[in-house]
Amino acid sequence: MKILMVLTSHDKLGDTGKKTGFWLEEFAAPYYVFKDANAEITLASPKGGQPPLDPSSDTEDAQTPATERFKADKAAQNELANTVKLSTISEEGFDAIFYPGGHGPLWDLAEDTNSINLIEAFAASDRPIGAVCHAPAIFKHTKAPNGDPLVHGRTVTGFTNSEEEAVELTDVVPFLVEDMLKANGGKFEREGDWTSFIVADGTLVTGQNPASSDAAAEKLLELLKA
Image 1 (spheres, rainbow, N blue to C red):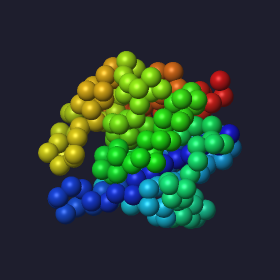
Image 2: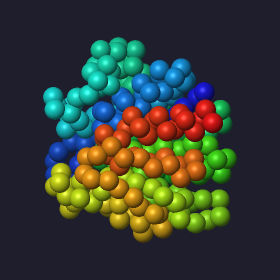
Image 3: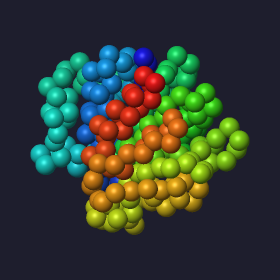
Image 4: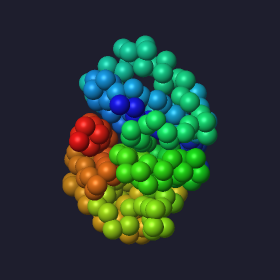
């Protein structure tokens, strides 16, 4: 069982002068769900090497058992510091692909042609695709084999407009995940802000927010085992 995890390389939070990147819990929780299932994990990012960590996800109140485990795991830290450059990755040989969020993907992975091509290849071969929180930004330009937006007519979730408003970044982000998914024809579902919530439509798995990371990864595994 081989799983490709793709992280952002983008570290600038718009014009705020603040840093962003990937959200630690959204990487660590799925990473260990997959690792504990004996999956072979490959980590990739557009620029390769160490992906930028969103500093807001590294504060004391943002820690979870998975992030604490990661902080004590030198092998995992080394793996993360050496992500493979996305342009060198072929979809062949992987059973599933998973995208952790953080605000970074809104800027780079949403527009990255290598990422778009990978997702479309996984979709065409009906292999599981997972994305949590802001990572459903990756579906902005991806197409289904029939040429429609990949999420068109499919049930999806992601970081909600009200959650973006709560973190006061509505006017900073290049687009709102919820609005984009709806504009692309997705049937957007949600629970209350910060509630763990995932949906699976066929082999497409999406999670609403950081709290949904474990459940999204577990659903992806369930699809793989089925």
